[in-house]
Length: 220
Ligand code: G3P
Image (tube, rainbow, N blue to C red; front, side, top):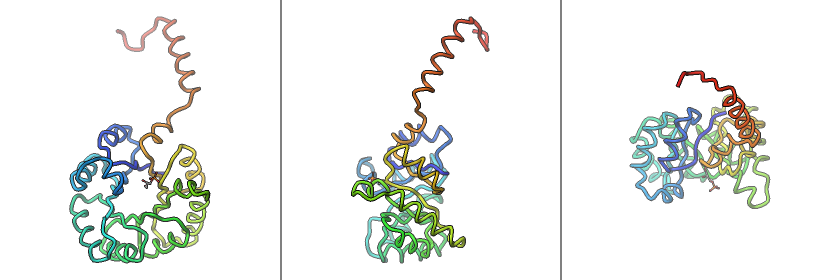
């Protein structure tokens, strides 16, 4: 399973990328706004830190303008994935861009039918928002299971299931059990994946016992 980080905060991206566990980054207009930075600057900086796909979202809602914005975003770096919304214009742009060799991430997916359309449009990634479905009382992970099942029935679909709107480590684990390709996680959730109280407790005991031996693996 690939891990992307869902943020436009370059300090978090630098820190987490050093772990060697980060395969890509996703941003959206809200995350760019939160960073307080200009989209072209921040995407260029992220692309220089993380070699994997870096999603940068168009702001246009109309096909021709989406293509114009996509051309600007694609010029930033070869690892930019153009993010388009799951609308008729967005999927039309997805088809055009993917036919032209661009990586395209189709975002704001909330149904299996939408995911099927995105795969037919040649998307590299489909982004179902599990947390926002949970928020309205629907099980976001059921949608992930449905999409994974549907895509497996059609091996010629090359679209990867990118679980988005992830809110907790349990979302990541459930997505991995289902077999989703990618989870894009906020920095806090990625940090949370490391945590277990028995790891901390066990390490403290090992260190105390080791100190008692008076030994050093490397002479001080
Ligand atoms: O990747 C999409 C994600 O950023 C949305 O997350 O928490 O705003 O629903 P959230």
